[in-house]
Length: 271
Image (cartoon, rainbow, N blue to C red; front, side, top):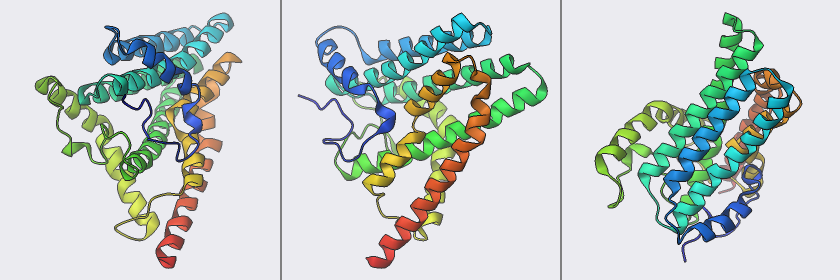
């Protein structure tokens, strides 16, 4: 039976994967049915857009529903991947998943800017927070993909997506189109993080991060980002999200980068 998880065993504690153990069990139940991962991806896309629409309405009652929908989006986002590993992986689905994440993130920060007052400074603040959020997510995903490849885990995602080829069952033209769109949205981020890691490590071949670092880094994953947005929204403060991302969350990211530099250079010297 295919593994429902991205790693063959638990190499580190992924704080951003809360609730996904339940989704793995749901995926096992859905595997023999006609439900496909793409159906789940469409569902979480619609769920996330609905959450953003509710946030822009500025009503306390709808805020609480939006918060629950953001958590549901996270769970569905994990379910489509778990179901793909139970049935069969898909590069088309992998790209569509990331593009759907991007669309939901843009809608969420647009709703926050609308809620803050729709002034130019509100849109600029939301855009800056969106950029930081995307880079934080890409930072975590970059190291997680390296981890999975090193420990013979799931390999649908590649360190360099320009080298990816469709699986035999993927529609080649649509997969190529989604790959090009993915590279336009995320490719520059992946290349930036790869160069940043080499600079931090001071070598062209940086060592694999430690499990402790990966656990700390998982706080930058999309699951934790959605949990933060859901928490602020539940208490009627989604407009605070840009300040949290550009304040304490950005500071924490800087501390993690310092950790990575110290750890990788110490490993290189001891080796």
